[in-house]
Image 1 (cartoon, rainbow, N blue to C red):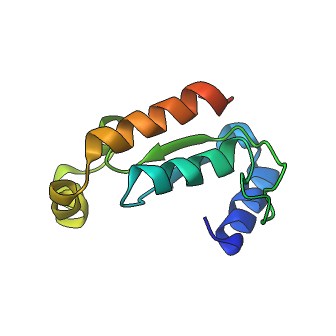
Image 2: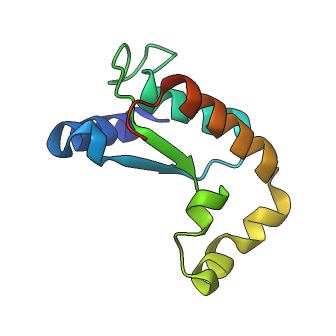
Length: 108
């Protein structure tokens, strides 16, 4: 997650409260999604950005997870995400996100 997005997430958490912020990711690989998820929950593991050492514990999901997919209009989801689902390892992404939530999320 780039420094600008880290700052946006940090500002939103400060403005609305950590318990009221949900981060929705769309990274193409499980490892990248996991790194971003860890950043918004346990703090930037690279210690390079605004979230270095900042444990927000935010709820975090990936757009291809079933729990998120159910939140969208089916036609809109298919139009916007459907093609991605064919090329992504959705099961691996969902597993990575679940592990991060189990370990770090405080606001589920």
